Length: 103
Image (cartoon, rainbow, N blue to C red):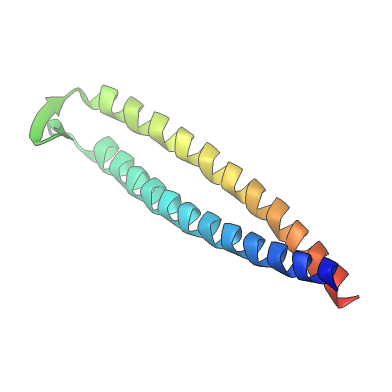
């Protein structure tokens, strides 16, 4: 009986972890979407490019801004892939624990 109680507690813990992973992934997905939109707009723009730095709006070289955004995009894609992998591992563990409890 105590083994089942500890498994139920572990299930609850894993469900919380999965929920946190989902929230984090949603935030990264939103940021990635914004960066992709900014890249698209910047590529299609023939006007001067600006970047907000603190409270200042500064003119920047378009190619440098594109490079910076592409780098941020790559980092976010790696983070999202890592979260996907963690989600898969925890989901499999959760499924296994539920099967153990149910028989």
